Amino acid sequence: MPAERTLPVAGSNSTVLVFADADAAARAAADRIARVVAESVAARGKAILGLATGATPEKVYDDLAARVAAGTLSFRDATTYNLDEYYPIQPLDPLSYRAYMHRLLFSRVDLAANRAHVLDGTVPEEATAEHAAQFDRWIDADGGLDVQLLGIGRNGHIGFNEPSDLSVEGFAARSTLLIDLHPVTRADAVREFGSLEAVIPRALTMGVRQILGARTVVMLATGPKKAAIVAEALKGPVTAAVPASLLRTVADKVVWLLDEPAAAELG
Ligand code: PGA
Image (cartoon, rainbow, N blue to C red):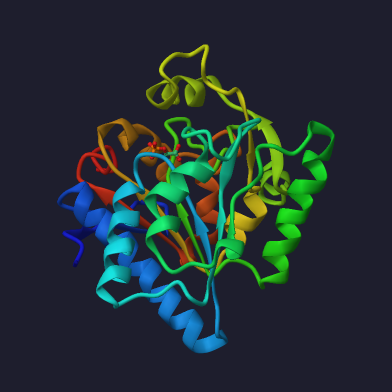
């Protein structure tokens, strides 16, 4: 699926591809992930994938599952690491990201269950730091991520790395951790949880270090609600206050896949 247009963004060497609609952008994301799987398996016998949840990537998973059903893609040699999980939450809770991934991808493809990693929302609080450190050690032992699929929150978060007053260097080096969700994130989660009071206010998230360390980053953003933050992340200052702006520090390996409404404020 060719991009409708490549958008040069002044002051940024990021690759920004704009598609006619969200389905075409999602198909392009699935194309890139499928390509990374094929190339990584051919080169190293394995593919290490960083995955995302939320509304935006649902169509990516539909597309990947369809390719597996058609026999043109296999996750046999893949290992996956998800960006984040609410804390605390049970994996069988339909609102958990473990349940989301099971529903949208894991139950539909030939991925080994013991190589589908989602941070565990049931570990005791005093064990979360060690669990997070272990998650990073597993990714490191796998040689890092071949590709990380990302969405962007309306506050610029990537994973649940919320806006921060850390330095860019400090934020870029941050490990996987337990965080408090930002008010904008909690407000957006009402869609899933039904009310603000019901939103689980904390989460475990892959840190920015692993995200920026991925060999390829696919940022997928669609719909008019993302237009302002996409423009801020690509054209505003590089700052931990807009987490996705840090993708510009590794711009040569990042592709932004947008639909027209999400690209509307890029000019
Ligand atoms: P959304 O979330 O796909 O549900 O908009 C994106 C994100 O918060 O990363």
